[in-house]
Structures are given as structure tokens and as C-alpha cells.
Length: 193
Image 1 (tube, rainbow, N blue to C red):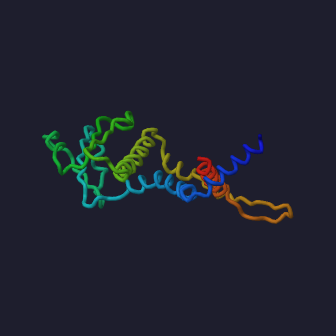
Image 2 (image 1 turned 180 degrees about the vertical axis):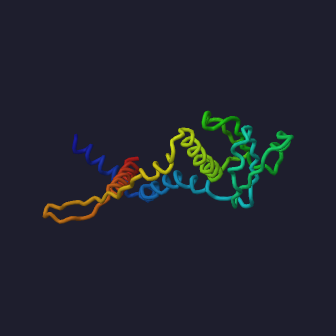
Image 3 (image 1 turned 45 degrees about the vertical axis):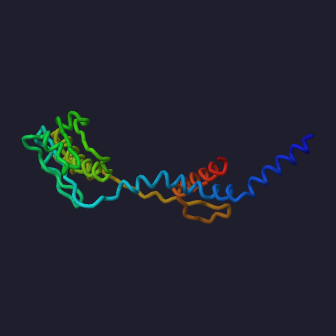
């Protein structure tokens, strides 16, 4: 009876594997999954053309001067009638800073009627983070602290050499080996799936 079961399993397996749909999906699915993961990130970086107006409501008065207009965004300060400006169709997003960001890092919010692009959020973070870091360093009141920190930074380049049984050396990369391992694990998972 076990030989009959083996024959049936073999026949079912071979009939499934020989189908064009199985072969197509086996080789196509990794690309579909990769597209589902990477295409949204790729598309979020697209610009929809034209400069977008960003209204900045800086209740502290400390941060608006840091924002410089870029090729995709221009920043304007809020004046009287903030609600009217916020409801204006020309405004792409409204950036609200309610408190000192060193004391309250979560006191910043961006409002928009559309999904805000990662380009804008990165621009805001990259504008504010260095300023806040410098301000934090100055609060320690240590002379030349910034210079000391810059000089204390050390970066090494670790070279990895793989030795063969014969004793010959070959340069290798742990990062590349990890990426290849992850890739093959993903492919095996897709085949099992």
C-alpha cells in the first residue's frame, strides 16, 4: 500500500510541477513580492510637479528661519487668520511647532489633506535635527565641546580575509554574504509557498 501512495504522490507532484502556471508563479512571485515592498518607497520619492506651499506655524519663534525653500517646497510663515490660510487650497501642508523641541521633541506636527511625501518629512527632519543637536551641545557649557566631539570621531575600515585550506587569502564581505543568505532564504520561502 505504501508503494501506491508513493506513486500517487509522485504523479500529483509531477503533474503540478509541469503546469505552466506553477512554473510561472514560482519564478514570478519573488519579483512580485519585491515590487510590493520597494515600489511604494520608490514612488513616494516622486515629485508631482511644481513647488508646494508649506505653511509654518511656529509658536516658539525659534525655528521658522531655519527652513530654506527647495526646488519642491517653499515655506511661508503663518500670519493673522491662520485658519483661513490652513483651509486655502494653495497650502499643501501646515507645519505646527507648539513648544521648544529640545524639551518636547514631539511638539511638532504636520497636517495635510494629501499624503505627505517622505521627501518633505526628511527635509524637515534634516533641517531641524542638526540645529537641535548644536543647541543641545551648547547647553552643556563646555568650551570647544563640538570640536572635541568632531576630533573624537574615528571610523575604521575593517577588511575581512577568508583563508582557504591551502592557506591562500581571499577578500570577503560579511555584508554580501548576509545579503546572499537572505536572498536565498526568501527564494526558498517562495518555493515552499
